[in-house]
Image (cartoon, rainbow, N blue to C red; front, side, top):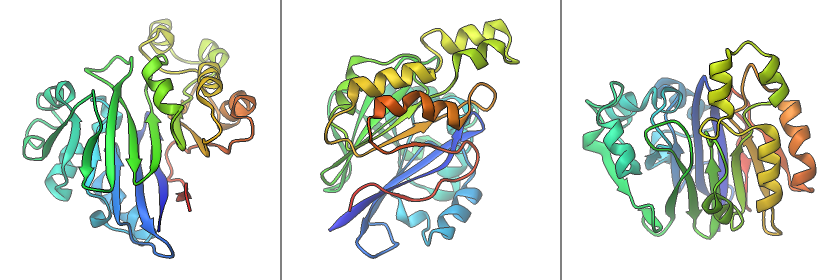
Amino acid sequence: MSCVKFKSFSSGSCGNCYFVGLFPEESRRCEAGVIIDAGVSPRRLKKELQSDGLCFDDFSAVLVTHDHMDHIRSLGSFCKHVRKPVWATENLHRALSRHMMTKFQINDYRMELSTDRWNEIIPGRISVRPFIVPHDASETCGYAIQLDDFKFVIMTDIGAMTSEALSLARQADAVVIESNYDPEMLRLGPYPLELQARIRGGHGHLSNPECAEAIAAFRHEGLRHIFLCHLSEHNNTPELAYKESLEAAAGIPLTPLPRQTPSQFYILSE
């Protein structure tokens, strides 16, 4: 039997990178794992993995959500030094092939995902279904990830919820969802009005109340874990994000992820 473990290495505008994988019982080595986004350097990722007794061989693929810098800052270095397949949709790969941070490295590692079906990326163990979400990038994806029979959904940098995102989250055992800003902190904070409008305009980020509303809509009996990601450094606090969604979570463990520091390894299934 295997258990599913999840870790955030960084979650916010400073950089985004997550790990989810299958681990044998009573073993620290991963049988099958993936990295989601490459917003931290390979050197930092190697150090953090080593602190948990892991290495680059413990994941087999990189998934990319979109082409903003805080999600792909180190993707070119990943291709050069880590040499793992990079999975993304056709439209997103087209953008990555033109981006100054990835265009010289990405093509040798390019693997395309279909958006209308499950894609097997680690045979017999991990399949992925991308779903498009509104955000002001070339194309932005959330991911439903099936690890054996465990379903994990991550949706970060999502300007508004979609019916497809809610549908997949209603089938998930664990959900990572953006809770980016507190509306009052944003209104009174240091951001200019133009940037404030971009953040809350439906193709920016999900507010704490919008996140809570989404959780209430997708919460179901089989859901075991909810993680709040991509909290704004200037327009939110972990306490505000947690408080806003606590009632909607209705007893399901609710965890705000740290912005710049790694989280613990969470055991999602046993």
